[in-house]
Image (cartoon, rainbow, N blue to C red; front, top):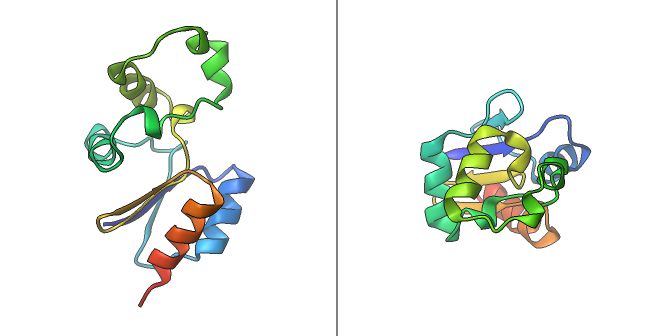
Length: 118
């Protein structure tokens, strides 16, 4: 699978997509229009080791709902990400068995190398 879960209204995600320059064989999914499904989220969790690693604590709703004052479990992280796209750390970039999560410079550089190798 070659797929990038992104937020089209996010300027950072737009910049990353330009930098990675995914080919036409890469499926782009705007998570605001179509949130990630449970099967894919569970697969990603197996790849990175935890749901917390996929969860964005920078989301405005994180503090708005008081989640920053709670002790969240892995089940909680999963539930919130499936309910609300804003809790997904983004972008999620999948190239076969390789997974790149978030917008750190290192992740974006590795994703660009992966998607443009060939």
